[in-house]
Image (tube, rainbow, N blue to C red; front, side):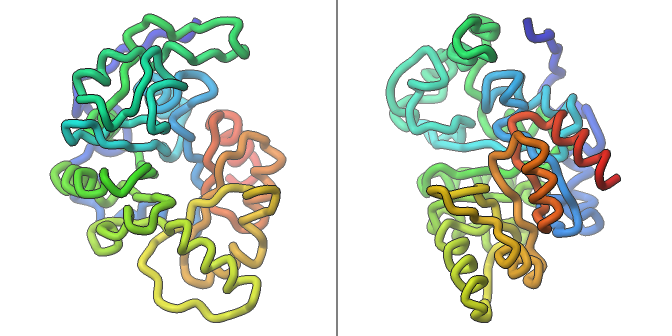
Length: 289
């Protein structure tokens, strides 16, 4: 059984920086998610190999395992609250069915977000019935104020609510906002926000890198790309070199194999997004620190 963990109240300090200190020191600290000299281990939907993805247990386990940052996904509830869940429906990760966007926050809170997680392919469901709920984005920001976040917006509909929330929480300096949808990250391309490249941006840089064509003005601070897309490698040596010439880190998802991670780091990749942050942290620290 997963070990129990007692969480403190929202906003309790649990690590290196509280939210207010992070905002205060924002001009002095470089967020590792936008620093090409860093090799952050980024917990994919939390420590999702050990706990249900995109839940507080997964995020808190990632923090305990010393992940450098968290990656998470955000949708908008029917009553306008940014909630942390990957799919547009509840079907895969909870005991409920239906679109996330059709449910109020109160309705989403009724779903068991630990119901379907099984570490052994369906042999056991250790988090089922343990009051694991779909978290809100503000809950993650307040409960884990020390960790940088890579926030994936799953639709353009959630962008303005997330923008308001990051401003209200003074969290813009520690959050890198990403989306495949170019329109969804448009409002994050000006300070104090940090935007990641959209799919359109990534394709453009990939083509220009392989054609050796100069890159024009950009409005993003990092790239987050899959290791492979439809069988083809994305973070190639040329692609990463082109990004580095622009001063941009390239983060690669989702990588759980230490050998693959080491090869990417040697190629010049920055962050590795992984379901198993403890394993990759150990490999990274043994090889580069």
